[in-house]
Image (cartoon, rainbow, N blue to C red; front, side, top):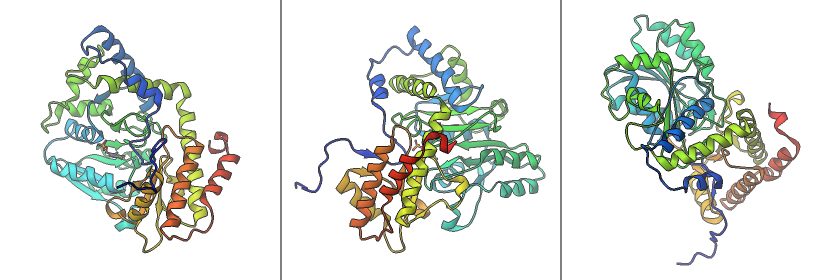
Length: 402
Ligand SMILES: *Cc1c(COP(=O)(O)O)cnc(C)c1O
C-alpha cells in the first residue's frame, strides 16, 4: 500500500554508529575491476596498505587484515594468544563487552566479568582501579589477558586505555592487554604502541568509513610471542602465515580485493587530512550533539563527561517512553536510521552516530529528525536541540576542541 507520509527520495540518513555512510570517493575506488590477487599489481597495493594502516593504529608492528566482520577479529585476538581454560579478565562496559565475554566462554576460556552493577554500570567507562585490585589478588598469575572495549558502541562511553595499562603495570602483572576499538579507530584518539596494547581489534564499517567486511588485529611483540605458545585451535585466523605472506603484500587466501581498494582510499583520505584533524572534527560534532540533548532537557547515557564518546551519543528517553517506538517514527517519517538501545539499555535510549563522513549540516538534519520524531511521539522537550547545535557549530571551530 502506498504510504503517503514516506518519501524516500534523496539520501537515506544512516546515523547509526556503524556502518557509517561510505563517501563517494571510497565507493568509486571500490568500483574498479577486481584484479589477480597473486599478481604484481596486487602485491604493490598490499604492501602500501599494510604500511599505511599502521599509522592509523599508531603502531610500528604488523597489522593483520581479515576478510571478516569485527567479530572475526575478536575471535582472532583470543585464539591467537590464549590456551583452553585460560582465565581472562573482562570489563563490562556495555553490550559489546558482554558479547565478547560470551565469545570467550564459547571458545573454552574462563572469562571473569567485572564491572559496575546493573544498567547504571553501563553509563561509565572501565574502572582501572578495579582491574588493578583484581590483578593484585592474582598472585600466581592465572589471569592471562585483560580485555576491554575502548569505545563502547552500545552506550557512547569511551574508556581510558592508558589507565588500564598503568593498572596492569602497577599490579606487576604479566597479563596481555587486548582492546576492542572497532568503533573507536579513526574517530577517537587511539595509540596502540604508546598505550602498550598487545592486541588491538578493529573493523572497517565505523571510523574507517568502509562497508562492513574487513577487520584488523594490531599486535605487539609480546602478543606475537604469546601466539607461538597459545594452544587454542586456529588455522584461518592464525597470524604467523598471514604475516609471512604479507611481507610481499599478499595473503595466504583470497583477500577482499575491492574492500582493500576502499581501505587504500580511506587511508589516503585520513592521512591526507591528518589524524589530529579527523579526531578534532569528531570531538566538535559530539559536543554539538550533546548541546542538542541538553537543550531538549534529556539525559546523555554517559554519566562521566571525561569519557563522552566522540563517535556516538546515547540519548536516554524520559521514564515510560519506549525508545524503539520513537526510533520507528523517526525512521518511517524522516528516512533516518538511529541506533537502538541494546541489552540492558534496550528501549531506554537511542544512539546518534556522528562519525566518519558527516558534516555540521548532516548532523543538524539528523537532530531535526530526532526532534520532530520525539515531538510526534508526545515527548515534551524543554527547548530546541537543533537551534542549540546550530549555535554550537556556528561559534566553535576545531581550535575550541583541542
Ligand atoms: C561494531 C562493533 C563490534 C562488532 O563488529 P561486527 O563488525 O558487527 O562483527 C564489536 N565491538 C564494537 C565495540 C563494535 O562497535
